[in-house]
Length: 102
Image (cartoon, rainbow, N blue to C red; front, side, top):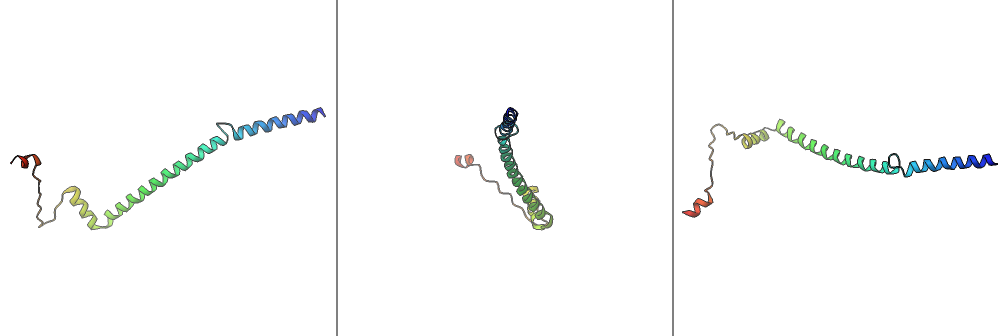
């Protein structure tokens, strides 16, 4: 009978240790699992944002690659290119200080 009581106490002690490790331990328990889950959700959100950015960049690249009008627009805007037989007028606004003095 004493052996059964001793075995029961040992089993309850082992069960208590396992429950403590599973639910309350900071490094391997439920808290750690919850922290990892929230970290995973955060990383998935960042990944989705990066995928959206990549898709937008791909669309821009394809637009430039296959659309002559888009290439022409970018060349005019960023490089200041002008077509042949085209007249370009550059208008410089008057300085507000000088116009007030006159």
